[in-house]
Image (cartoon, rainbow, N blue to C red; front, side, top):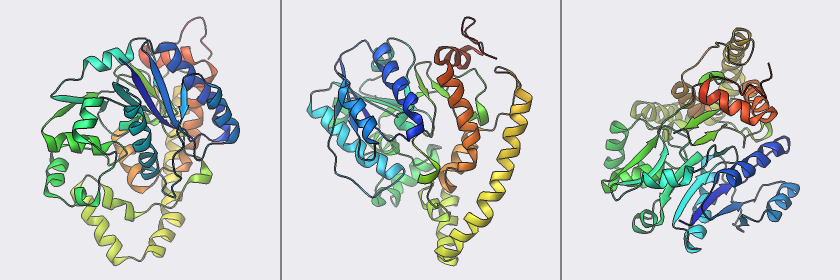
Length: 344
């Protein structure tokens, strides 16, 4: 196996330790020949230099895009994957800057899941590109794309896909739709975390192989207005119809004002209260807290914007991870802290 790892490196200045952990975990647990193919178009210069010095990283000079969110991520991933395939990678996996393997043999185990009828492995719901693993044969035969085209979205086939598969149209959903259209399946990486991450959204382990913190590429300064316009991307048909009606009936500036002045503050108060209650109940790491459905939160955040009022929850789990990665990852896997490193 020759593994190509495609990563879009978009890291805010406060997340340098997370970048270091991402690189070290890949190096520690990847036992097959590999190259990390990275794009750095909006990366801070000091982080780019760090990657340039890394012996396993190949930086790809991609044209810059004004796209943001999933569209930007997909734009760069398309080019990174193409480069990895052209360089002779037999297998390719996409990772995020906050996702990484957690045990040796992860790549070999994922490769064993692939077959002519099972084209790739990916998380079963959302965050598909946090670990989308596939063989070059699938890519060369079907030429999948990470996002859906407008023609795809308006097709009867996509309506069938929506009825059959609950999903969020995030980057990577194009691979799922392509497989569905061609009559092949994929291996779903199910959540295997046993710990109690805040809101059930951050800090997920997939298949006991790969960890994903989630949302580390976002910062408060990057948060852009999202409102009902985004509903046209929903995989849930009634919501798409609602989005179309909303865009027709309510002017964009009014929707923006309503979301910024009413939607964000109201949702913020609710989630802040829930987080505070969870933190008080949890007390020490490993205690019982409030778990909010990951699918519910993921759906809301994808359709109405990633709320920056959730930042306290993100900073909490990120802090635990970076303070003692081995202990925190063991907590997620087993609900027990590593005894030698446990910090209450």
